[in-house]
Length: 339
Image (cartoon, rainbow, N blue to C red; front, top):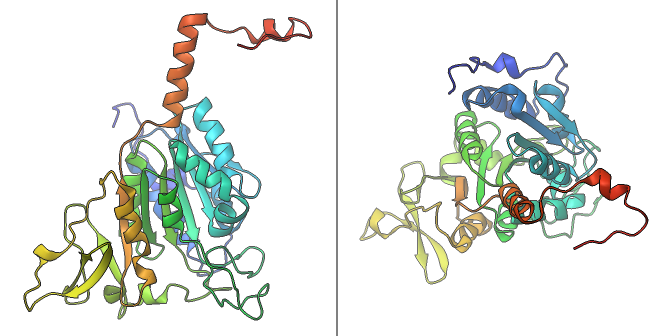
């Protein structure tokens, strides 16, 4: 941290705006975690920008004492990309929801990730449209009965992590709103990443989809239904830490430790594996009975960021042709020559 940088606290990132979410909403925990993490990043407050689209999560910029943009539905990645290209020194974060990012904003999200723009994406996944009062969303389970699907949704849901990995995102992670220490650790890792960082945060909507993640958050259930991903450590889970994940051909397999099966037979987590296929397998394993939901960093690999490549390209062209003169071009007449 620079000697001249002020010592920030959570209070420095709070605004005078009344935080208005439904009592008990998971968004409060996420906001608090971000406000605690930002002071620890060693970045001047004026270099942070928080961008949002439309949805409950999109109130975020009003509650963060940073620069911010509340944009239109699904377009936060496009606006954030423009900011990062124009001002690459800024720390640009997106707060979005499963509907905002994966429905109307789906194309913007995947192209931002494939370009590896240096933006941090916090996707709040409550598996419902909360702001518009309880319609099914792109992550709602098949058969979801909601106001827009009274007989049950027929749509197959998106898996946000699989989608991000399919776009070859260079950093993909997951946490849960009520697992605050874990969420803060994941946010710090995302902040340190040089390219696009995609963090899915499983979040409860206690009004329109209460209990969506109870099997992961209930104290009696969570150890058997979640698995903590730690780089360089075997995939072990369960209350007694007696179960693990190993490869069986091209598939993952849950095994019980003992009777000839040891941790040496298990997969050792490698978040830096260059092939996204490994992380993709992890992202989908909880869709099979008996498998836990992975929490933590699935993938973290280095690749050139989009904004740096643009800056280098412009510098290379300018060194050959000189700096352009936009005013001269605009006054040059009705015919332009573009080379």
